[in-house]
Image (cartoon, rainbow, N blue to C red; front, top):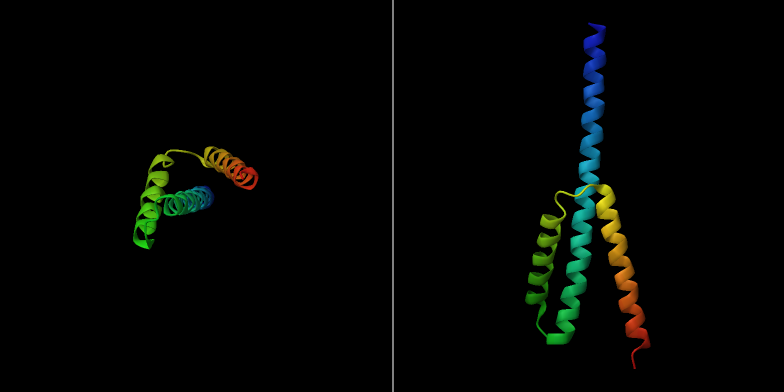
Length: 100
């Protein structure tokens, strides 16, 4: 009986751990997709001059693509991808500040 309870508590702990990691990964995917979609949408809005409906459409499409692309990735790969995007954003900011 005690072994059964110990096994049950271990299974519950493993389930909570796996669920927490999955929730963190999903949250990171959504935040990454939102920020990337917003950035690309705003760039497109400035370059092409489309309205807010197209901005929202671009945001949703890019967010969906990021979530679909990163669905098989673990937490480490998502964080490395986020780091790459932050470095790319800093490079874009530097280009904007230096350009005449």
